Length: 601
Image (cartoon, rainbow, N blue to C red; front, side, top):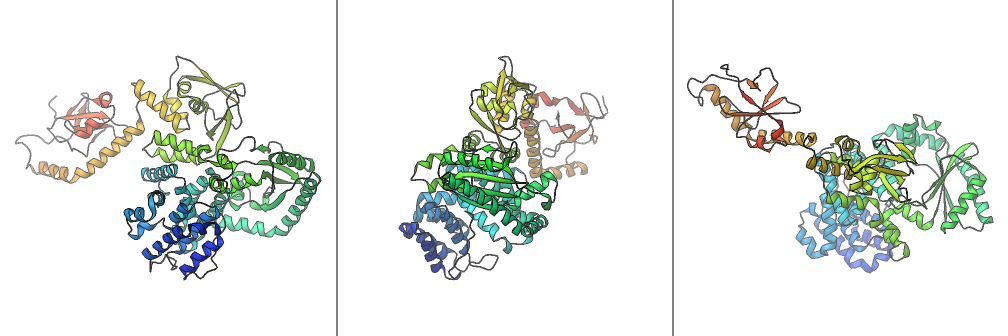
């Protein structure tokens, strides 16, 4: 999904574009009627429509079809890609369902739910948008591939957008789509997303890196040619057929190194990489021995992702060696591993008739298991976005149980998260932990490849401190549920703040009515004769407390009042019959005696 789409047919000849599609991807000729029907329907409904760039509306859907066809998705997915925005052309769902059936309609439904994600605002609105996107993805993974194809084509053609929309799309891509492509194992799409996003979010850094790479092009070519020649000669001696490609690292990868090491691109030396592709797993290990025989490996830089694949299905051997006094990164993998690394779950379609189907099934990817857990225990607050970022789209670590079982956790996870991943009962009874045989605090961040042992006590129970240090949503949700059910002193400040915000919203709706009432009191229209105008309140018989009058009910003297302790506004005063007061969480514990200070006591 990483090759740019350039049509050879005239852009103003849609019938020629369709012919080019079938000539480029002949395997779809057996589905020609179905795909052509989708194309002609989209042309009919978008007739005369132009994009903001001034080009025909239909070019974008055809480019999406090309992107999806590169990964050999089925005809329903191709048709849905062509029709992904058909609802915006005033076409009803019923019409699409009748003409194209439930499969295509389901994919279009999923993509239509997630057309716009407000990335600039980490709010409940954004959390809801992303939740819908991911749950649609969990129902049919083709939804997310259509969206990735859509976003990939849009950022490739970003020049037609305004500067503000360019920045918004680039931010959305780096925040959501690049990490998501990474978690789906689609390294080609991920790298392209990151590089194109950098070009528009930090153009100065992009141009600086581009200039450095261009300046050293000839020097780099000679250096890599020598390294490739040596490996090829040794592989030939061993009778191993290999394909070796060389490249400079992606711009975004270089940019991250610059930030991490606080260096200019010209000061970085490990910018070069080789990829060796062979045919069998055992050849990978023979080749790593050959490479380490040619050059000295750097300590701590060898990683075996064949024996221990990443959660996105990625497999490869990684090493970094000192070649001619500079670091050289080398990856070694089989051709099938390479296809999975480039296309991720999309390679499920590439190998759907072969034995490798199980290797790339969605059920084998951690992200789908996490999505199912989130669907079973949905979150509805603003913290969802951060949970999503850290768990589903963030970096990972791999740790082991004492019996060697592999567990994958978000980077920054603690023994608390590990315990709850094993079992909720173990999480509730955790009192200590060991990492590689040494006692560690249960709040300490775990490190990659540690062997973790959980120490429990049957008398122990979850605490609020543990909830604060838990990284995974599962651990936080389980601790929160236990505290709510068993700890009478526990107060969920986030939930209380949310309720106060809802109360404020209700207040705004009734503000005009209550404001008129207050004006009537000031004029004496609604006051009882002889009553003083009282605006101060005693709290537990004392004055000089900070009080706030609720805007939902506008209490006025001499109406009966009630009060409770607020976290940010002192003592909140409501009318005694106010429904918002009655809905306040933990109101029994937070209520405090209040009365009007009319000077008589």
